[in-house]
Image 1: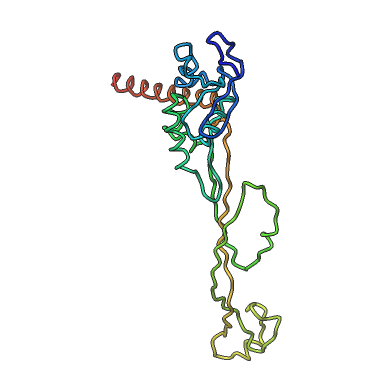
Image 2: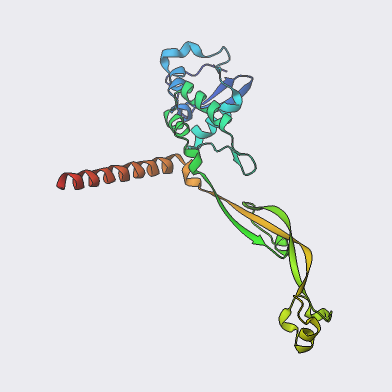
Length: 240
């Protein structure tokens, strides 16, 4: 492989040796990185290895995420419903973004904008009768439930005449039942009952936060709104 000349087209393929892995890309893809752009510039033509590739002392696993961002402008998201965000991986990627001089990715990670990419909606309901038929319902992959069972005691009315259909229904007892009870208090049987506290959770994914252009536009809109709010407050205070 021959060393690319400084006048090579920006879309010409080049090879990067990152740690023990090899990546193939183009100079135009890497142009957002000030470090890589300088490495491939005419000022540092001697940086190429004899086979024409360039060695970069960066963690290859992290560089894979960086190259994916440089190619399509999609910010990385390291999230799973069971573990949440992988903050250690974000921190490691941030250091590589600083080292490689990728300002937009660096800023996005520093400001923790990935937190806006995923929202978790939570609501709770209580099932008092132990009916678990709702568990058989088919749900989307981004929805799940957490069950917290609790045993309690339920008092059930007992008919003085031991009529089964009157059990649990004091209003079903008539004059004969009242006569059988006499002056005694109503009797109740204690039965164990299962109460379920059901916590529903739903993950809401906002893909626009990961798109470089959309993320920048949203950030500019927020900053513009803040400036407008400050101006209105300043005008209001000045006018009083």
